[in-house]
Image (cartoon, rainbow, N blue to C red; front, side):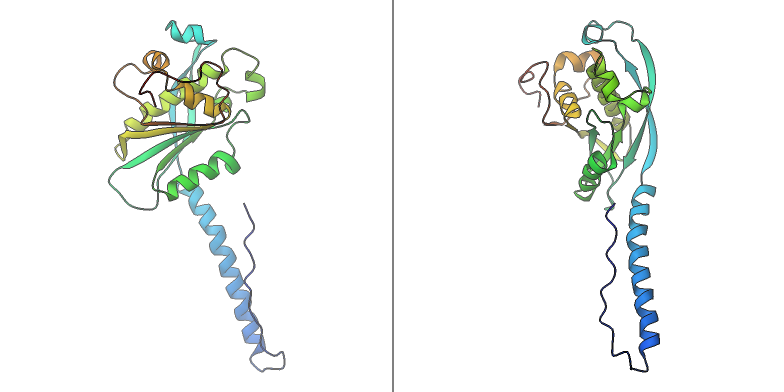
Length: 221
């Protein structure tokens, strides 16, 4: 977090009789300014609600597409946040992290900006939920399937939240997360992971790898 700037105050002549009181006032103003900036940061964190959702772990794409029994179930810890503007229902964005995992400076920053724009946000770390890291998991063939599985599990969670408009839930990702956002548009993967009408309203993939195809089916995005 960027350190708050000290209040800039022009002091009167030091010989002025009112200087000691003015100096105290300046210190008080600076303290209030610093405390307000810090409080806003803490309030933003305090405003996030910790939630969990159930997902699955797959060893590879073949296992997922064949709809075989999963390698194991996993509970993913996530954070749900809402804009300050009060509304009956909000559009929402699921934000998928890079290969480095969730970071406040990246996914957290994007989530905060999206909330300012009026979207509810959901962030989580697929790797941490499985007790590993992206670097360790990237050597296996299962590191992308778990990301897509978590994305659709997150979609189901938000679709059941009364404050969320289930028809207006998008997914955004960066690098690894961008590939997850891209793959979530493929009907074969969607139908395997999320049978039924539930779909993302939009897929926004920032610099995805494009490992499994350039584009999804028509009208997928």
